[in-house]
Length: 145
Image (cartoon, rainbow, N blue to C red; front, side, top):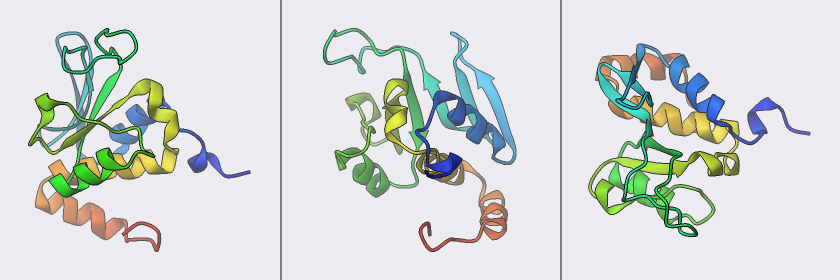
């Protein structure tokens, strides 16, 4: 069987992986939701239920949406248009460099895939100096540029 990195991703992995990136601080929103930041810029956050993200079956506001920043609009489109991924967006996030995923669908990603999404989110918000340092310390692998 595969190693620990190939197992389905879990909510705890979001917290662990985001916290493990350099220079990360964790803020908390009004409702106690975690907001992971680098240089005072959010790169991953647990969103409170909002009217723009509702469960298609119940019509209820989704209580389990996580927002991940992405480097570019092209990256966003490739993630949300690929029906094999759990990522989506709403009109509220039109033009915003981020994708959404429900906690209940995180398991559709492997822990490795989630780590790449979080690393890309961090890199998109980190200062150029911090990003360059991190990239120098983490050279590209053949399966991940």
